[in-house]
Image (cartoon, rainbow, N blue to C red; front, side):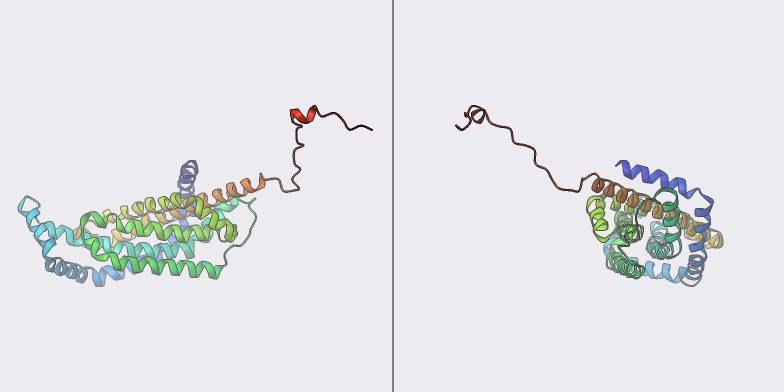
Amino acid sequence: MRLLFDSFWRAWAYCLMPRVMLLSLLPLVMLLLVALSWGYFFWVPTQDWVRDMLDSWQLLQSMLDWMQAHGAANLQGVMVPLVVIFSVTPLLVVMTLLAVSLMMGPALLDLVVQRRFQHLALKHGGSAMTSLVWTVGSTLAAMLTMVITLPLWLLPPLMFVIPPLIWGWLSYRVMVFDALAVHASREERLEIGRRHRGWLLLIGVLTGYLGALPSVVWASGALFAAAFVVLVPVAIWIYAVVFAFTALWFTHYSLAALESLRAESDSVVVGVSVPMPALASEDEQHIPPPAP
């Protein structure tokens, strides 16, 4: 728990550095083009597709009709853009994660190492190729999970639970590996994962919910259409800052855990064990010495 909060406040403090703020603009350039293109070409068709799908789902349509009959006017008109937003947001999250991992991750790791962990020896438990394969494989697994669970996102409670869980697992897999690839050996990385898996997954889930906060900017379809050029860059920049914070939180936690693990190993004295001399029992003390 102490390590969790210590790495949390350090990550926030690092996010206020000018260097980190400038790094957060790098994914924005790429993702801004993607978001603008998607919004321009696919915002209206995607809403129409979701609206037709909701109309064809009899059980959900019955629930919406009942809720509208009891005072929730135009509920479907509000729900359609929300479903679109919460469906597209994880895809942007995945793309931002890749951008952070490829563009920001090494720079943020170097910043943390220079300021806190220069004393840690490099054991190179993972290569650049291994990191790339690990990131791509984990991302494909997360995207497959998103596709499989997509129908469940139409249920209001689950749309707020499933995406952060998927994001938490993905960020835990990718960012912990990148943070430890150079400094930790494979055995150390596996041991840290065994000891701290729960806390690291918790960091992923918490930052997953934090990453969903900018979606509030897109909560209204009319507002989104009217202020598209302004809202999309702001929202994606917030995503980039959130991901920078996420990378810093994982890096501080992982390297501090590695430092603690090595401190435990160094506390064990390596050498020949010398047994303690046995104490004579009371009977042995009264045995007379042998006759000469």
